[in-house]
Length: 282
Picture 1 (cartoon, one colour):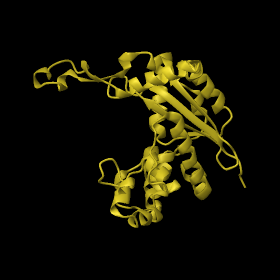
Picture 2 (cartoon, rainbow, N blue to C red):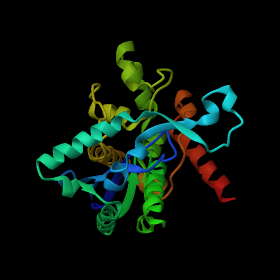
Picture 3 (spheres, rainbow, N blue to C red):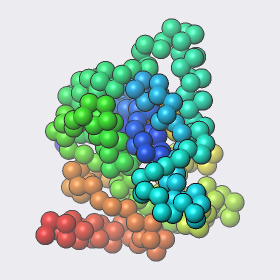
């Protein structure tokens, strides 16, 4: 019986709402033997100097043609800034704080330095994933192409998984729905989407579920988020290890909020995943 499987789980925070959408500002990852509670995972955090030292990346912009009806005829790509991203000030304060304790050099690093460390860590694990793996993979490749004009190939050698796929399509099942139904109306709000209209399936909500801590708040800091996502992976592996290897490792499927709203069973959602894979292979 397998008792060792090393996972590396990545989380990224990126620029958005402008033409630099997807550039990574902060990246964190956690890795270790996910099958052993006695194993203390290793965790890392980096701020991306290439992104954070360019204030132009932190202006929210919109297409000029959307500003006013009279500008509809302008070129498609022309944009104008309308406000700064509030997170940029927070990042600058972080950098100042790191400088005061002489830790700037170990956290605020070039994208090349970060990739070199990530490559070393990937070389000693069996798989790599994230809560929304397609998003984080796209962000890593977008950032690499922007700063190095190439593709980050080292991450491609490993089988991948997506925790959101695993939790939305398998953990959110009949037992989960029964748990939610037993809550009072106020408590149910902790498991709803941002719109409040449907059950949510964010990492924050899944962390509340596995920890039975309704007040848990995701920090949206890459290192801390990768740590809680590593715990989500441990939860899944403790209960559904064979499903992970059979159905989710190397097979990242889509997530449908409609299937959760309809309360489809894990079996029905797996059948839909398999259908989508077969259709994609045609």
